[in-house]
Length: 415
Picture (cartoon, rainbow, N blue to C red):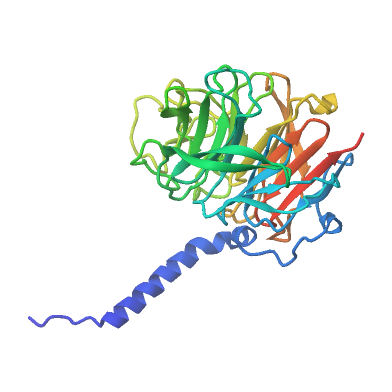
């Protein structure tokens, strides 16, 4: 019998055409959603006057505190009050001093470079042997993708900023994948010797080989040991402490490819030992039967197996930074309210997010409602920026990072 000969070149071309057609078939319906997330904006923001496209409450003004910070993510303050920002794409951590007090950073000072996707930052002035704060024993913690680093902070008398020295690796972290950012948060006293580390999943939806992925870890500086603090969290990129209850709140990004409106993104209140559902459950304990084909006698997406979301957020909003308003220097109507940065969708036919939302809460964190706080970053399917982290200070000042525009915004409240 004569063998059928197949032209290898023809086969490869046909295969490439098929793959291209399939990719186009899958991506075309969400092309409008992809554009603002990944294509550069035609307009570059250079001055305060060019921020007029942003809509915010009438008693606030917004300014550029610093620019030229491509990939700006996490914002912290050093012990002298200078902002420290992680530039994840560039592999750097920088300081932004405003020594002349004009409301704008004087310059960008590189503190650390050649890092592997630095993201989470924490600063703590302490001594484990003594629970009291020690201003002369300040440490900077930096979460790279595969390691947690500790640095001593020393004050530079000439530049009036704190600089990190003496790098030490504290902990190895899981290898990166789809979600490679790691975020840090110290628990409140008396557990402030414990550091939470958020570890995203390596995939969109899957069962992880390394059980640490899709979790929040906790590292104990007294015992030098780490363990899983909470699991079932696909990508809880940011965490914050409630100012009254001390509970940990976290944003959570839901999976893709279930359509424009599923699954919801989430705000969760994180408690030790709990499972928040991913990959088989989402939102208010909804079973993801698109992924999980197992048949159950009892619904697996319910207590005590899984913990439902506290607040659902529209699908694909991509919630990142969250911060609570303190009492000091803010009107009572803002006390204990929560701001959340919606980084913005890519996996959606009609883009959503690209804004900051105010969640109205009582002193115990009870949800009372929500409203848009800042909008306008999305313009005719083009994103002029994508908000990331939020730092709310006592006295009416808010800082916001934008990793697309490369800006740190400064909001000022006016009575």
